[in-house]
Image (cartoon, rainbow, N blue to C red; front, side):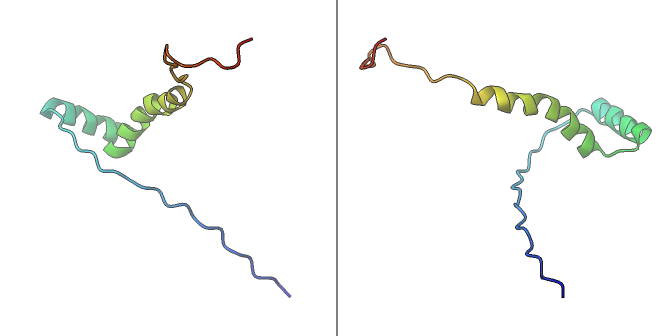
Length: 77
């Protein structure tokens, strides 16, 4: 009949908690924006952070390693 399908393992995401303070005016503005766009403050903040952090991760991985001036050069062209 039907064979049992093996379930794929779900990769667990690790989350870190970050807190920061907003002024009363910033909080009021954020709440008005959330109400107008029918979303939550967390989603607004995460969406805006992703613009900056998503591209930074890619750039940070491509930085070349620095070679010391005193490094031996065994294979010269």
